[in-house]
Image (cartoon, rainbow over all chains, first blue to last red; front, side):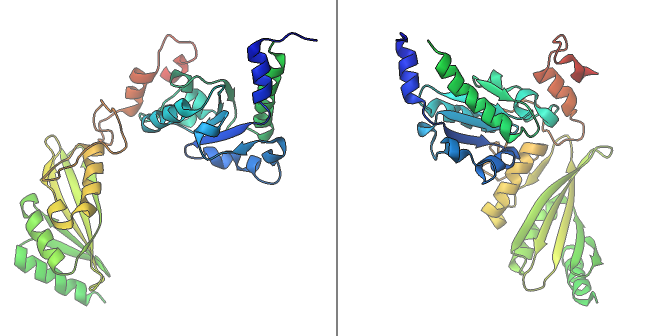
Length: 144
Length: 167
């Protein structure tokens, strides 16, 4: 029998399905809609969008964040219970995207929130989002 | 076709000694000096122009002027009266119309205060609306070079990833 650390055992117990809280500005959610809809249907993998950050494991964050909205995003992040994961979608969260010269938007999200994974693309493909979520399970499996 | 508009404009011109023109059906433009603004607006509201649709600012950089535009609509007359008045660009001050239209005008003035830096005397809540912790100049002014501002504020020329923004 494999001897696992306490963290690994708990994580294996905790992570069965991914519950998501969405924080999207502008076109962010429009890009994720196919994932919720019937074609890619994320609920078959147990991924579900919850109504409060206190129930969520994963924070999806996309679209350009303004200086005003990032303060709210931080508050959402602080309310989430550990272990928590932040997945940033799209090029806006990485470099500012097409808003690189806007005076009112932030440029790199990891200056403000501890981003676990970036999914590139404008918009990212639904498959890429699934792959990112698969990586969370993989990470837990690889914990010793 | 524009009979009621012409009549109403003539009424305004004789009463307040201002100049205006009938733009087309249901549209009147009125240019006034800023001292007459409150007086005219009060009269307009009493005479059915209860709906203040919008207030906007145009920045005339070469003339050194801000042009404030007030759009007033009457549900009885079905006329949109556009009142225009010019104020100095360097010291933009004007009386607030919140005393006439109340909260309806308040939010417009608050926005313009934030984006153009216009001081509305008599408006008691001019807190920032969209831009929290904003330290730069009023961003909608024509002489505000936002790209330059962003380069200084967010990017480092020596950073390999970010030097492309300086080309």
